[in-house]
Image (cartoon, rainbow, N blue to C red; front, top):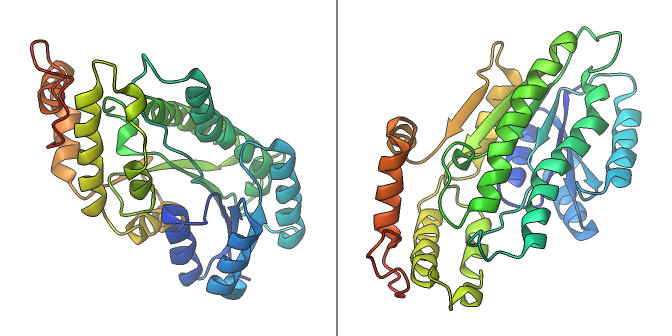
Length: 293
C-alpha cells in the first residue's frame, strides 16, 4: 500500500507541482482544492494516485470533514505527511492597506495552517499513545519568511509567523516523533506572478509610495519570469518527507547568493540598498512613476 500525504492548495502552482512529484514518486496524494471543477481536472490528470478534498483552509468544519474522509480511506494506517501549502499573497503599503485585507492574509496563511494541522495531526501519529510510524509536517514558507521587502508586509508577516509557528510546533510534537520541516521557496514560475500584474496600485496614486510601488511591481514581474520551475519545490518536499534525518529548513531559490547576502548583511545596509533601488530614501523623488527596477 503506498504511503499517503495530504497537500493543501493543489489547484495550481507549487501545490500542483508537489502533488505531481509525489504521485510520480509513488505516494497517494489527498489534495485540497476549493472548486469541484479543479477536483475533477486533477483527478483526471493524476489518476488513481490522487484523491481530491474540497475545502477552504479557513473553514474549520469543512477541514475536519475532509480529515474524517482521509481517516476512513487510511483504514488504520498512518498518514505519512501533511504539506501545508495553501496560501495567498496580499500586497500594499502598510500605512494605507485596508485592515480587512491584512486580516485575511493572516487568516489564510496562519490560522488556516493551524486548522489543517489540528485536523490531520492525529492521523500523522500525534495522539496518545504515540504510533510507531509517525508522519511529518512540511510547511511551505518563503525566503520572505526571513527577509521582508517593502509593500509585501502582509505576506512576509504571515511567513515570518509561519517560521515561528513551525518551530514551536516541532518542539511540541517531540513526544509523538512527528517532525516539522520548512520548505522556503524563492521566486518560482507560477500563476501567482501573473496576479501581480493585475494588482491595482492606482488606489495608492496619491501617496508618497506611488513611484516605488510601480517599480516594485515591475521588479516582481521580472522575478516571476526567471523563477524556478515549481517541480523543484515538489522535489524539496519529497526530500523533506523521505530523508532519514531532514533539515529543519530547506531553501530553494534561483539566486542562492542573494539569499546568502540577505542573511549576512546588516539590516541597515539592506535598508539602504532596497530603499535606493525603489526610490524610498530621504531626498529621492519617491512619487515618480519610473518603473525601471
